[in-house]
Length: 532
Image (cartoon, rainbow, N blue to C red):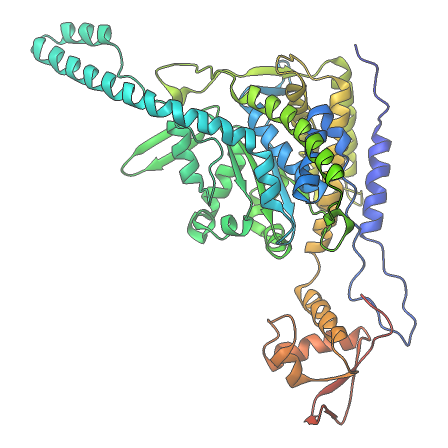
């Protein structure tokens, strides 16, 4: 048995206490004559614990971050989502629940929050290379297999018609002859593994029917997905429920008047949604997503922007640039090899003639050291979810924290050794570091999502006011030229200026003022002594 890792429930509680204390710290009291912050300061983004990704995924994430010039957490989320896709079709983790254990898919749902221009798509393209290479191989094989299938299908149809004609009037003989003939040949599997563009769950279901049982929904433009057909009002509840079932590994059902009832077993779905902060705020605040449990299944990350930082500055030295590129290529080659090996593992259908019946997946249990560690981690998170405790604000997310840790540990295990038969304590400890990072991010994003829209608008307006010369502003100028653009009415502009006045950032001029040669009946003097 492995040595017991140095981890206790107190460690987790301490870590989370520190994070939430920072996230919810009250603002420093302002001097009576000075302005007050519009809202309490948010915690800064935590450093991503990249080493916890292990010897294959960690170097790959760093290589992608360097080559794509994107945030490390963005690159890490991309490789982890692809690794989930590769591993989920091979095995299930087994949680130490009940006599035989509870199977848990190695499926992860990951959400990355970043502004446009932060190289999200570039990071995803690097991470997806082994998947796209394999899809191309499958597509080339599918073309010849489909021609062969068409020939066999035609021959089977002809033989079946002949038997029906030959055994007219003798049902017993016909049944015997058809059994001897066997079922019609199944078409080759579709080559699609990670559909692009705007995948709908209806489309995913069709791919599951005709294709491989392990798929990924990878959206580098989450706004397109969240605003697409799948999540329109009339489809939202059904899509959300199906996404939850996809994470759970539950059977998928589709009931249609024309197509009848279709039931699929043992399908697996990995998901990575990349989204802009404004859209993310709406996603996190959506009651239906929360009530149906979809939000609780996502692992969040919102890294800081790299725009204007040294991370975006490439070396002018050709030798240094070549060395960095060569090193990144070596790490990505090892990553591509590990992902490709798992993707190419044979599919073990439970019934070769009925793919809807599902597949055989290996069991990946925890060894004894990992079992003890899991129980401690589970108990620590349950305690931290209680009233007044650190994880209470993200209770639904926290309830799945221990299971997500085991899922990540299973993925890391198979990436390191595709023939592994159990999860060890050291790998689970690494996975727990990753889930602790996502717990910190869930707390931070939940805090940010709770900021009233009026305060966010006032913050943007104040930044615009501070960018202008002069110390006064009139109401008409605010709603004609101010930012954000939602302040395009006198009422909205007046309300935003009142918020700034309430916090001491603007002082009303009672009798109005002449500004730039124009008289403004409603005007304010802007305070510049401090900044947000």
